[in-house]
Image (cartoon, rainbow, N blue to C red; front, side, top):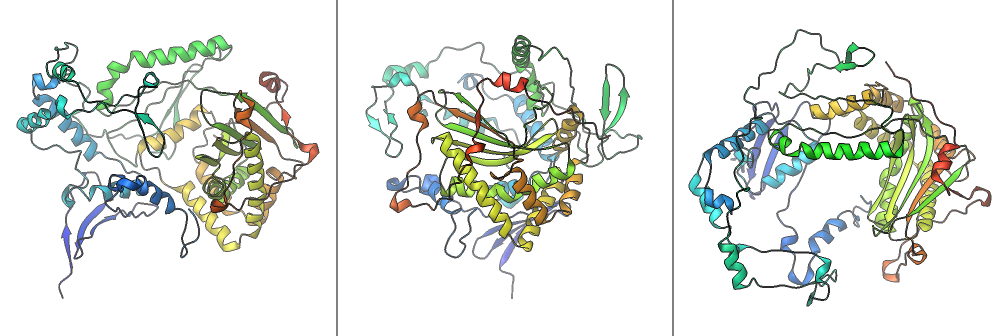
Length: 558
């Protein structure tokens, strides 16, 4: 019996070592198979060609609603998770874009597998298999007639203008059904259309000069210098320390340069700090026009300020709260941080695993179920060798209420870890180890990782590998003990610092959620706070920092 499918070849970049095969089944379902022997994780994507533009007129937002419902579980799976038209087409502009497309396509670096398959499945709706990878990138033949035809559609009659401004208050006559937005639809007047049809020529609107930054030589220069796994020092003097790493992995005609200029006076005073910030902005702005062509050619540049120093030490059993009123933004924010570890690999591994265990459930319980806000997440927070766990919620509700919900979650998470069976615990460990050992897909990603170590003067280039080795040795008992010691509200060793961004109007700070009978939520039980452990309000933040002892600066690891 003949196979009920067709095979298709796919045009791919010349440096792409992956294999591609397009298939169309008898039921017209299109498949794209990608074989990558070097990948460390697999990914799959299914794209259904529909979305918000197909929403029923009477039920706008249905596609978005369905998207969210897909994460809510089901009975079977209950777990959650004009000047141009005058000038006409220019062939040199086309040729420049053709060369840029050639560079982008043929020296394309790998991306995250999930992002890659999502992009490919979307392209399969619009392009034949052969062009799935190259569509929208490669340009073939210069066709000025087609360009002129496209330009002919850029007319005032085909134009719509949307203007959003507070100056229109009281001048609208319609209201959007779902969000209550006031608006008005106005037809263009004949006078306005006529002015658009006959615009004056603006001498400043012109085609750019040819781009001198577009490269033509892509040969990778070979070097006889020995290859190393991590950066090595090639010059070390009183005023300069230079690091170098020979790329033996990505082999693309690309390079990464990082330059750090250290000057102790930059952050010595508030005036210096502000002057440095303004200088950085002005310098970037000054180079914008010059850098534009370089950016089009694939060259990137940035200038930013950094500072390093020492962290204040919180004493065991402490709980501090700092409040500041900001009315320019609508939501309130709470950022609660538990200080845990300093320059300790084993404790960092425990923190990483705890973060792995709680990250998804914190979001699921306090955002999806209790609906406290759109931004809800937990993370590892590290600075100058000091690490801890942070819980962040952006919400319309009282920050005191949010603080209580964070504490309720922590109490729940302790029991959750305690009840976790060995199989599930080991699966979480392996998932974290996989993340830590995941290969960097692009040269820039690896370069930034190493550069971060150099600028922090820690030089721990194999940090992820070392943490992964430490994670392998962890067991549930020690993780639970570590969690109780540093996060439990009953612990005499816990160090808590909470920042509350509130409103100047007290009434706006007292709002708490209400749940209707139709939208009942099973809340986690509140934690009864020990009166002796109530948080201390920080009245003067500068004075608070001045009186706290400091952690030392982490020592280099090589």
